[in-house]
Every structure is written in structure tokens, then in C-alpha cells.
Length: 316
Ligand SMILES: NC(=O)c1ccc[n+]([C@@H]2O[C@H](COP(=O)([O-])OP(=O)(O)OC[C@H]3O[C@@H](n4cnc5c(N)ncnc54)[C@H](O)[C@@H]3O)[C@@H](O)[C@H]2O)c1
Image (spheres, rainbow, N blue to C red):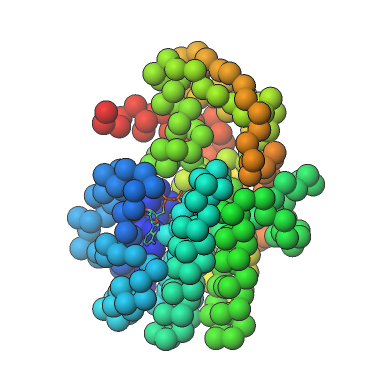
């Protein structure tokens, strides 16, 4: 199949591209290599894919309708996996406008181009953050998600709504995938596990927001890639899926895992919870299990070991 992947040079996007190529698909990536984090990291992420004869990456902005139209005209994709976004909760409070522009307007450019080009299968990267500060766990896809507590979360909820509208009006078959904190090799450098590893490895003190009992459902990258690939192969109708590990880890336990994997004792200080941060996430993945054969495999202890091995092998 010919699959267009936006955000192809990012953490999840590059991992998805590698798998699609290994499975024999033709892939056109689109990524603008923005400076949210070091673009040299993104270049390394897709270095292997760029050697593959069935891969090409357009360096361009999804908010530019002409760039997107040219990519669609040249490649004639059969399906689209839309991962490009400004990610992260805390920076979205400081810079809401860029989140609105890329995550909402950029999505709309792609949806419109699908309509114009007759592409009728679309996978959209949503987020567990749409569940807000919900206390009842595990989170299910039909729970109410009307109270996002960060601009980032609001853009992802808005994205799900826009996808529904294009599905309703134009028959665009769409899956919205709610990823639960993804980690593993290539994880974005500002995300907690990667940042904590850097600080612990350097013998620096890390700041834990809250009393350490907040918890997350951490999902290993290979499991997420399995879910994305199963989704793009089967996308039909309009469906929302949780993609998580369906297990929770507290912040204190997480730091402990990272310290053990790196063979170092973490130095920790505490600070108040940050605005926008949710106290817990926990995915009910029964819908994805039933309809996508999604079967997350990598437990946190094993996943952190694998992450640490990758982390140690990084330059600089
Ligand atoms: N990593 C997680 O834990 C997580 C959790 C929930 C949802 N998500 C979502 O998954 C997707 C991928 O996340 P990630 O962690 O790989 O992030 P990432 O920042 O590593 O990847 C996003 C990529 O999109 C590109 N991009 C951003 N704006 C663009 C634009 N205007 N035009 C073209 N390219 C652009 C970036 O350069 C980057 O390479 C995002 O939509 C994110 O919101 C991620």
C-alpha cells in the first residue's frame, strides 16, 4: 500500500515508518523538522528509512495547503497516518497559538486534501490527555471527554471532532488513536523518562511534581507501532481506540525503574503539581484488543531496560 505519514521524523512517526517499510509498504513522510527539539535528532530518527528505496520524506509544513497538495498529487497515497503535531502538555500552556495552528488547522488541511484527492482512509493520533483529570479508571472510549485541562488536550479533542465531521460529510473512514504516554528508543528528549534518565545519569537532582503518587499508563513504542499498523490496515467507519499498556506506574516507581536500569541512585526533590498535568491515566484497551487484535506485550521494567540500552548508545 502507499501510505503517507505526517510527523515521519518524530519519535512515533519514524518508528511507524520503519515498520511499514519492513512490511513492504511504500511510504511518503512529511515533516518540517521544527525546533520543538533538536532537528538533528529527527534526522537521525529517519536516517535508516531514508536509505530504503520505498521511502521519501518531504521537508514541509502540513499547515501549507500547497505543500500538502503537491505531496498527495505526486505520491497518490491510499491511506494517511497523521502524527504531525505540537506535542506536550506544559508548553501548550505557554504557547497555545502554535498548538491551535498545527494541531487543528494543520489537521484540517489534511482532511480537506483527502477529500479533494479521494483518499478515504485516515488514522489520527489523539491522546489520553483528552480524558482530563478524570478520577474513574480505567478510561474507556465512551467516557465523557468534555473537560480537557490543557490547550494540547483541547486540540486533540477538537481533532477527534473534526475527523468525525469529515467522516460524516465526506465518508472519510477514520480511526482516532488515543496514545497513552509512549516511551522507548527515540522518545522525545523533553518527555519524563528521557529527561529523568539524562539527569540521573549525570548525577543531577530531578524535580518530581506532586508527592510522587501520580500515575501513568506507559506504553512501549513497539506496542504503539503494532496498534497504529493494525489500525491503518483495517480503518473503516469512525472509531476511537485507546492504545495503552493497561497497567499503571507511579512517578516514584518510574524513577526507581530508571535508576535501576542505569545502575545509579536517583537524587530527587519534590515541587507542587503543575497546571495541566493530570493525576492519573489508565487505559481500558478491550476495544482495541477485540477490533484490532491489539495485544500490548512490554511491561514497564522490561521497557525501561530497553530504553536505557538505547539511551546509553546515543552520541553525546
Ligand atoms: N509520545 C507520546 O507519549 C504521545 C502521547 C499521546 C499522543 N501523542 C501524539 O502522537 C504524535 C507523535 O508524537 P511524538 O511523541 O512522536 O512527537 P514528535 O514531536 O517526536 O513528532 C512529531 C513530528 O511532527 C513534526 N511536525 C510538527 N509540526 C509539523 C508541521 N507543521 N508540519 C510538518 N511536520 C510537523 C515534528 O517535526 C516531529 O518530527 C503527535 O500527534 C502527538 O500529539 C504522542
